[in-house]
Image 1 (cartoon, rainbow, N blue to C red):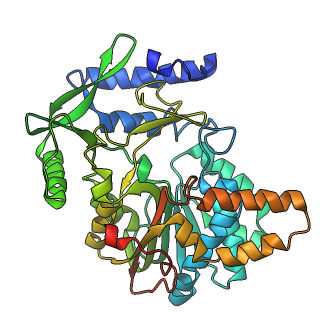
Image 2 (cartoon, rainbow, N blue to C red; image 1 turned 60 degrees about the horizontal axis):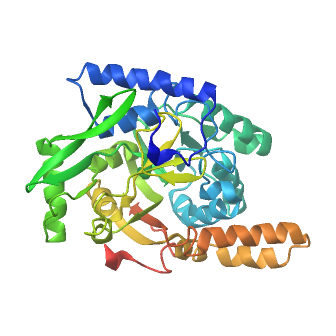
Length: 397
């Protein structure tokens, strides 16, 4: 399943290709039993999360320099320490019963640093929960945290199988999670809304269009209404009509607390710019970005940018107060980065000092993660405090 568009990508080895072919077979079977086509969102769901085969469900390394992409917590301890600083007041307001609920734990790097920093800030939660869909990653997280945390801190960590049942209070945190939610793709044809589907073509897959159902069609019309303009014929993009339901599901019975989301994306007006006429969907493979999401299922990450205006609407609809929205650079600078910079300048080891300076640059420079990634917070009967005092961007929503 190769194409001329992807000849510059390094070829997977035989074992990886065999793994991908097993997942492709599963997808072909589902297509065959669904009148020859499945929505692109379903293809994305299988490609990323099919048990034992999907990109996030199987065991291949994904994070860091040996994987396909590097997330902020993998660069070093600064990101997690600043996030811990931002939510410490919330955890302290809730008190001894507070829960920290991390969605998608990656390598465990975030949890390791966050727990140590929360201990220093006298803001340890009663429980630290990691919702991780990959059994392989859960095991790696467990090993890392057991090796690098004191027994007292490690005992706080749990890996639930889903959102928390019943009532709870605390902090929900998600870094680069919403961009990986399986997203419907829409297209405009003769003024009508169509949905992108995936069909079998030769030994691979191809995309086609079918009339959108009312759920997706209404979501697209809602976007047009908010933009105060109709999409042009031929315009294609993504929309997440399920986002409000997802927010309600993951926050569950939270009675008191805060939600904090970090991701790349745009406010609605920028997300749906006329010039962005093929949306934001892209694939990541060995630190290369390309535009063929149907290539090598299970071996590459599929992602779409976040519509932060839609996220703000979903959080408020779930019963939370909007707390703030700013760039990652502004958020980190407003939540402990100044102290980090002072400690870096006092370092005796020149190599470590340079390493940390480089980490700060990657996290904060506009050409790196600083402006491309944004932070949005919500609160319920608590206050973030100064977390969003720097660089407020809510006027752009």
